[in-house]
Image (spheres, one colour):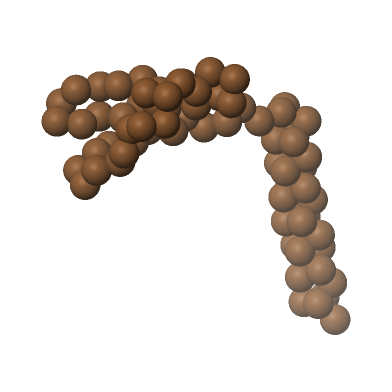
Length: 71
């Protein structure tokens, strides 16, 4: 679903391939339109991999720094 606000009027557009209508295709975006596209849901596994990957990178960087300073 996408939301388009034009002149204070809110329109909800269903842009899923199997739900697009001729009316939806005929809508042209104009100057001053506000378009809201909700974020796509991500998988929990992807979020966990990104978090722990970042944490591991920080720990490895800190360990490398300790080794360099200790020399």
